[in-house]
Image (cartoon, rainbow, N blue to C red; front, side, top):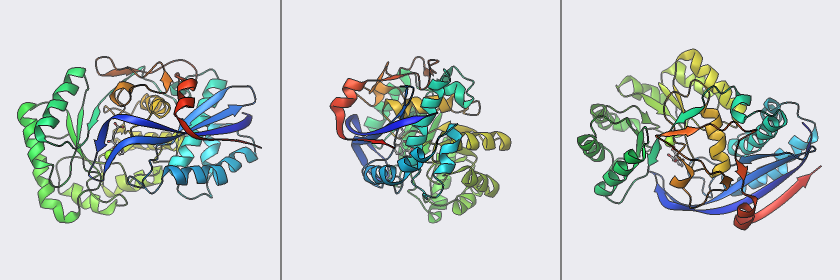
Length: 369
Ligand SMILES: O=C(O)CCC(=O)c1ccccc1C(=O)O
Ligand SMILES: [Mg+2]
């Protein structure tokens, strides 16, 4: 693959509804889009999942722009790339900054798939032509409001409901949900809101027949989660704590989780995502694809990775209309009966809407050799 130049664009988009977790609220998003232009005129697209505050992990939109322009892009352009698997190792001496790395690597994967006339799904080894869709429901102003939202989502066809929890928004809301919907596939995501001191409190959650509890303890922990899992019946799913296949191996060996939420940005890209997928197959650990309120480009990448065989639990990749008045790709991502069709066109299989992207752009830079 011969890369001619790389265009970075920072766009700003309003979320249809604010999204609240145990750490904070997002109302709009600044998003960095990466366009890798090949010498043959094809373009590959990637999207960074970083937000403006270092609230989910340590990265931000500003640090991503800096790391991409000053370090990652010069490394990428320095020597030819024969296969996207070469990108992550090329970035090896830039520590961390996985969202930034993944956005660039994802664009190279898209360009590669297009150059091979393959869908990104097929290029990654995907086998499914439809993926199952769940929805992540943020913390609401009232319990009644939460119940109404869940009712609406079930009518729309979502196959799994995830609610965000924190110490004063957990037992009571789960009790209420189970009273109305005793059987629905239900899970809870704490975004690190508890410590091991809460072990007796967390054991109360066992009575709600949850599919899993996502990331109850610290963002950088895998040890305490093992202690907690040994004291809980409900499976623990790790999100924030897993940055690599090595992290996943250690968490599995320590018994710190029975399920893994995979986010492409958090682990540094699609090549590492595949490694985690294959490791989980070997250890019989089910996977699902998490979400970071992505715009269309990131969403398309999530759909492609979810088409791999071991993504056996509905993910957080909801359709475009759940987040945006108008998404930046055409066609938008649509859901039917709780399923999203995996596109079979070349690359991500959706066209970036360039005129809309241009209108939303607040900052742009074009970098060539
Ligand atoms: O709909 C989505 O994209 C998932 C939303 C979500 O749960 C989330 C959104 C932003 C940051 C972290 C998380 C999370 O999974 O923890
Ligand atoms: Mg999570």
